[in-house]
Image 1 (cartoon, rainbow, N blue to C red):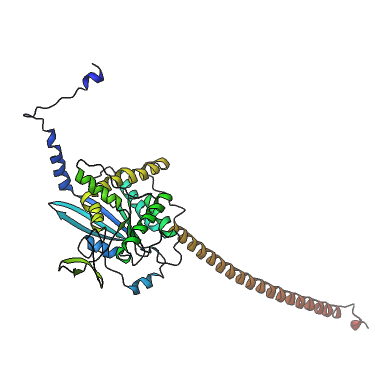
Image 2: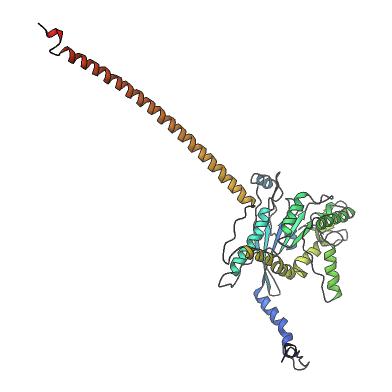
Length: 393
């Protein structure tokens, strides 16, 4: 029997089925029992509303706002911190272990060259930690801290992306699902915001920056139109606020109150907050997780397996700014210590030379004294000799 003959399909009768259609229910039970890990990273300059957005998104204070005095103190550190905040969400018996990764210090200094390097290193280190766990004999309860979505907050200057934004988004977008976000959208007029969005997307396409594009495939028209509206909203222009305000028609909403009216967080005419929340939690969380596994993590894993043996540790990157700075500091300390030891050696050598000269001088003095004594001794011996004229009669 050939392969074609043996691959004929068998259809179950509508009355007495095999039970294959119950598989989604089984998968639902397994996934519900296991839960999932989901990590969101927020990147952007201080004051772009990262903490406010996260707190608004989860309706609780996940990130504490940083006051201006603390930001000024951070200027002395000249480094980007990585802060991880953990939480657990549960809805209809389904648990999500949530990780919020904040990056204070990004873009806050005069010299911001390679300020995104600690962020890229963190993303790759999480891939590396997961890769190490996969190589272990026992792989139960893997700790998954891989970043599934990176929200890059763009300051609403109304003109274009800064060179820092372009270089940082390029580096980050190659390694993770990058989602560009325009913060504080209520500071721009609708016309200016629309133009600003277009300029950003034009630059993203021209610079070949990889961003997350939600899939449009859907079985029903309603889901397709929702996914289409989410895709067309990129980059998301959002308003973040955890304050309740009263609108002109006496509605209590989350938003910001101005003399001209209220900017509502969840009003699609004012903000893309609802669309971004839907993308992250309601409609595309599974796709963000699966694309991280099947695209970004597999790319990292494949690249590492091409250059490393099984179980071999990852080599330290020579381009890592952190390691470069550490190496430069060590080199400076080593050079200073060598100079210090050389100075001590020269001083010791000079002391030895001076001591040698003193001893040589003392030796010459003693030698001269010995010569003088020898001469006097010879004179005395000559005077006391029997043949001396003093003893002749």
